[in-house]
Image (tube, rainbow, N blue to C red):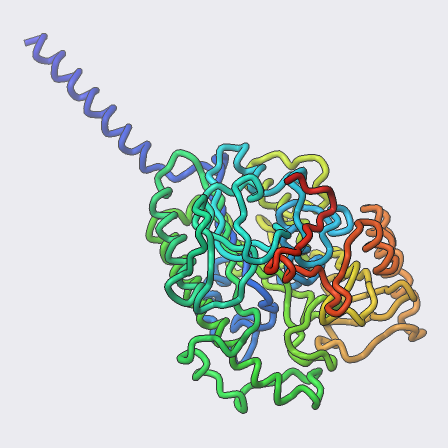
Length: 495
């Protein structure tokens, strides 16, 4: 009788332990564990072109819903509002004048320590889809593994905006392939398969989706989305000049169509993250590399590079594990491109390497404060292509003000709260003299901090031995198509 009783007790203990073990499996992921990262980088999507931003025309229901669950940095800026410089700064956490990556179609040197290399060293799986624009060996060249800056899974191309027949390279296959449908949907479909495959891995993942829309050409957007936006029905901002009204409406039709289609694709990605139960331990970021002038301030559509808000301001929504009361919170203090990497590393419990210049804003992400403020440094070191005739500049953007200087002196000073379309330049007005002096000192301090100076375009081109094409003032990436291309990079490229 005693033996049977002991057996019963042992059996009860055994089943209790089994039960506890099962309960342990169901416990939520601890905050100390490293989270997954899903970074959604779009192209030329300015911060005002969203329903959640108050745009009366564009339809972005999935991102509107995501914004309600995330922290919204309302004054996020691109450090240098054009593709290659932004992407280089995003991956390195450094300013363009530090890396030398300040015009399009340069090669980011392998010596630079990048986002994927840091995460990979911490045990992460790394994956990249879409537009790269950091290889500098021609826009359609195969990019071997050693030039992918730490990304392992790879379905990408240097640069293409043929959204309905988008080329890409599949990992180590050197044969050029083409996505079988409109590229935002194709990229998300492949990324969703990747997430499903790696959802239960012991190792976390860093997944970067570089979706090239709504960058021009705008007329190539799927027709059903273009039909949502008759040009005559679209609202123009008051700073769009008469000269560009008609063209801006025509371009906005396709721009908004791309935006709505891309929003739909992103919705499928967000749904997959939820369905795989990844939301509780995944940092999700939605942003863009720069904006789009679209006729504002008498600047034709397609242009960026300038210090105006239409060019500089980008969306930045971030959802972190453990977010609860912070859902839907606003942060009006600007976040700048170099700030993103150190902030993600901190949120991932990874030590920030020396040499990264951006500021760790993770506390502001975890504890959003709409009243916080800071100055973000933006720049254009060597205007090129369609912006070639414009002067170089350095500028700061706070939650209220924009202040900019060229080699010839101050050229912009706006109160963006009282003057949201930047139509009243306050430069030299006695009432704002002290404020202008304060902003000037802040800008100078920012430049001193990174060892930068406001000098001519030629000074910086000569410093890095960059050569623009004579007829098309830009790095001549098209020469690679006829075998005459020359790789240009801040440091010598070892082939």
